[in-house]
Length: 214
Image (tube, one colour):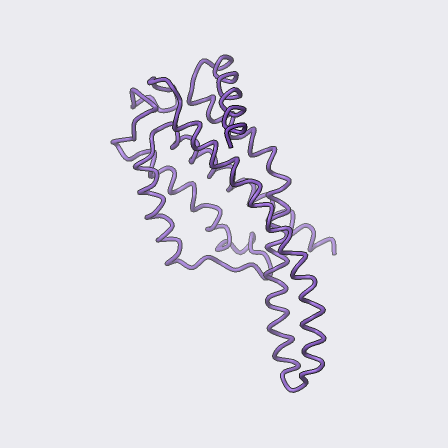
């Protein structure tokens, strides 16, 4: 973790020396790291999609062969192998998490007490936003990927839709987290959320085009 922290800190300082603004440096570093992680993120999304389809298929098999235990065991065993392969794809999240958590730490420990052109109403990126603007922007941005499943055009076959109650809980938790975090971390959270939205949008369009081709 220290190696990742030192490397990201060095990158952040290098970007700042070019931009002259810590807020912009945070945005550029976040986007750069997320672009590098995108192939793994796409693999994870595809694996999760396959897992959801397999889950539906397993339920259909159990219902179809409920009176034939031997055939049921054969079918379940066959599809369990596919499920195990899909689970390996989901494990890429474990590779991404240490990097993303370290980025939070890097931005939280920026050794300067200055403002940023991106947030002109605050004097320092080391304090939280007393106007509540950053937390609200973050909550709205963080919810957009989940809301895509409610748009008919972007729906993916077999993909579960987040319930409205979970969306509300996610919004409330996100609001408290962003309110307690310093502006530097808030910029990171917003940038990450916007990137998540664009990534999810591209993934859904890709899956729909893939289905059309097949």
